[in-house]
Length: 261
Image 1 (tube, helix red, strand yellow):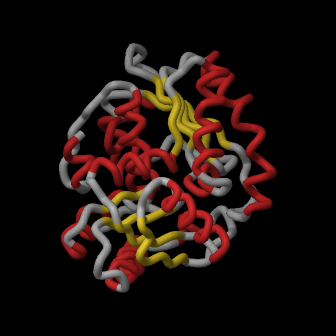
Image 2 (image 1 turned 90 degrees about the vertical axis):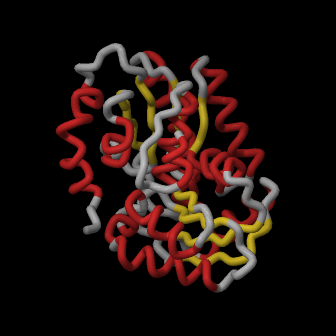
């Protein structure tokens, strides 16, 4: 049975809410700066790592998944990062794949460097997490299924190519409203992603891009179907955040990288 983000959240309450809410006061605190204004502690984070870390979230209020939308909130990242440092964050992850890749690889890295310089904290981004995941599985030729419109998907293609990968297939769902990715069912997303992969027989990895898509439970089924590693935005951003904290927690059932820790 597939679970929504809300269902994942409640499933994780029994094991992870203490860490997320702060009763495990000695656990590392991972700061997340996310596009939606009302972004909660990610249920995927609680389900995967709620026993091990705590989360601190700031939402940017992104109005739409468009270039103009990203431009309207990008300057809020540094001030929120300073707030997270003052609140005791141990590391910071800039969520939002498209928010961090839309101006290219150099801009993504500068954003990370600027947050690190302003806070003194280890910092990464969701886009960098995707790249780190692809490198970890030794991918070279990737197929990418995205939530985005054609223009934003094109920016992802450019970012992946700048990062050293050949993009052999890419297709987006054409979504722009910030709430729309959460409405995509896991069954339809799994089918869509598998179809994108099948259009690129030479791909050696599959990327599913957009932090708003619910991908945690479809990673392993897609890997079984496609016979290649799958890297997706939110689960692997959380995986990268754990590694940023120096933690390598192995969680089975959610694909190769998360199982390896």
